[in-house]
Length: 149
Image 1 (spheres, rainbow, N blue to C red):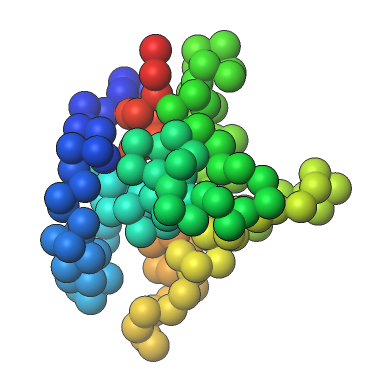
Image 2 (cartoon, one colour):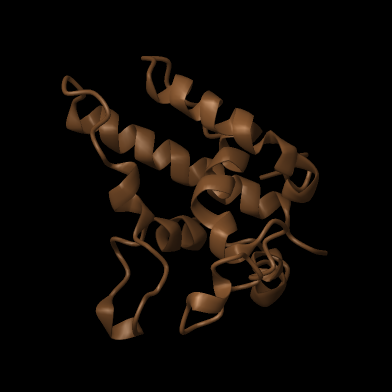
C-alpha cells in the first residue's frame, strides 16, 4: 500500500479548531467517513493521540509526564519492524479490545470502545462497527505517513 502524502501534524496543528468542526459535522451526517481521507486520520490523531504522543508523534505530548510508561515514538514503528509498517497490528493496538491481559498493563485507552459509542439512537450495530473501523484505519494510515525512513 503506498504511503499517503499528508503533511506532518506539526504543520497541520493550526487545523485543530477546524478539525473539531469537521469531526462534528461528519458524525452528525449520514455520509460515511472514508478511511483513505487524510483529514480524518489527522483529526483522529489530534483528538486521540496528540495529548500523549505529541504534535509530531515522538511521545512528548503534554500528558506524557503523567504516565507510568512513556508513550511510544510513533514515527519509529516501521523502523522497529524491519522497515515495514505493520498496518494490521497497529489497527489492533489502536482498537485495543483484542489485546490479551497477559501482555501486561495497558495505559493507552481502548479506543475501539470510544469509537463504538452510539451517536444516533437509530444507528445499527453494523453502522457503528463500520464507523469505528473507518476511524481506526484512517488513524493507522496517518501513522503510516509519519514514519521516518
